Length: 241
Image (tube, rainbow, N blue to C red; front, side):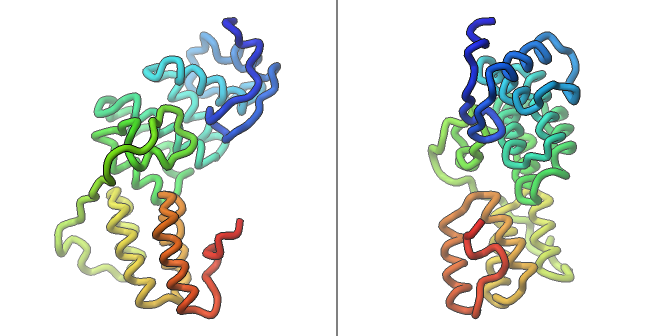
């Protein structure tokens, strides 16, 4: 089995830094190898299955069946951070090809992602991702990321007047997210929160964007502003987990 009998510790291959017992890794090999099924819900050890599929993707990034199986397993497990990594790897592998497959899997995954994460992938459905993309370097569960290189991508804003008539700031921000315009949504929410620091709904939506994009610098700046303005920070903003 080409050394599979010695597999024990898996680094970044889904499910965080998880140690998978040797026996489970072997069972995953036999459960998955040669299987034509895309949904692998009957696996003896689903976590080991995700790990095994990750190894297959590292060996052959163009193995689309393994990508799909891994994504579907993580959807069933409802593990958002690892699911983001698996989607990123598919978008890297396909690049600007395979639009229908990317759209189909994103549609299945979207209910298990934050609005910000779903918007990020919608924005990149056509062009796909590069292994060195800035945003990909922030997705820790991605196997194919090569880290950060270059400058941040500028997100195109909606045309003036396109956002007119919104009942509230949250509706405007969520519309931006729906069209993949994360920077625009963040800017709208930041401005609104500075006008009304006590608005808990806006604070929560903005915090979700900061966390999803892992923008620690902007989070720290806004946290400092809220500390200076409010008697206490909104829920979740203290940085404690």
